Length: 490
Image 1 (cartoon, one colour):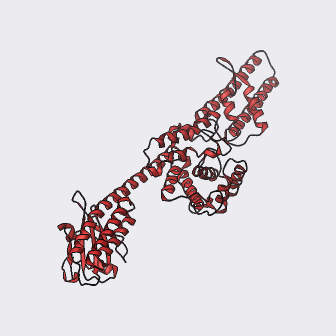
Image 2 (image 1 turned 90 degrees about the vertical axis):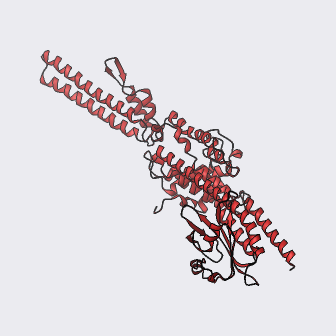
Image 3 (image 1 turned 90 degrees about the horizontal axis):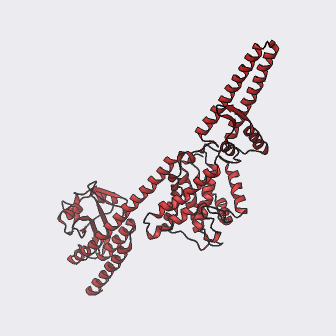
């Protein structure tokens, strides 16, 4: 090839890789592009790129062609010399140069002859790393034109690597923020420890199944790396709004709050003392009136009967306070107890206050309608929090996806009761994962964990009722996605 044509071809390679570097933020992919461009432009047998780690004072590389990850002191070898001098170093015989570091050659097992080392210098004048072309084709050593062209390539590479490194640092920072947010959620509600991570694992696993579909209603749905990250963030943060819910409501394990139960039990103790006092007063009056011993014994027997009855009420109330399913008889007995009165300093008072009767009569779970409304508000809090974050274009749907995870296909979900057509597939997947984990979680103080088979049966009923997506649930079961959320050893 004519020298002029060869130079044009090399300039075209540099231009092409410069365009690729301008839009590439994945550091590993970027370095691979640069290494291949170096090899072609310099007509080298191999090429390497070493990044300067200023904190550790080392050069490192994962893309030295034919090698595994390499690290060595930043001041050593021809790489260190080129970095110090901020100039290209062209060595016809590497082993004849005292600056050559043979350790890299030992690690790679590749014999080095000619070596061209060019520093990558940023626009601020800082050395980002070095590129090396190894063993020139056809001629014994690299020429000045090789150094000239690689220097041009190195300048663009330096800027691209700095941008990619900054991008990675920002991603790590954001990942740290996400993890810290999950820690904050769990610190607020320790009873759901691990829930967010498990829901994210289940949801992303289901998304991977959907991404691989070739037929069916979701065949056109795909999840690239950006979409998967968006989904994972939404799943991890779907319960973040719980920080806006009062802690006693979040961790409410029984139907009555602890302070309510203490007041109720103290009232029952007062009623018992009142019965004892009234009996003593009756016995005193009877004795003064000349009552027989049998009459006094009858009063004691009456007190004993009423105390036994009161103790039975106390035991029944404590049993009702535990979140179990009450049958009709249970509701009736609670109403009977609430209808009884006792006398205190202000007159006759009921055994149970209306609010206590309402709470103890909760048929399922531990939450009153007011409690449930406050719990459900966490979704709105989540959306407000997430919507305040300036998400990137690829992550902009995180608030929407997280906001929808309690919506149902029958339009009876919350907080907005949206119709099925408005619920994105990401939220539909998260809904299945969220319900499954809530059913099978072993760390909830207000309920026992449901066995896997029973949990899947419950979800199957939800699918039949068109509350959750039947097709996504089928995939969830057929692919055994539910196993992804189990803790190790479970």
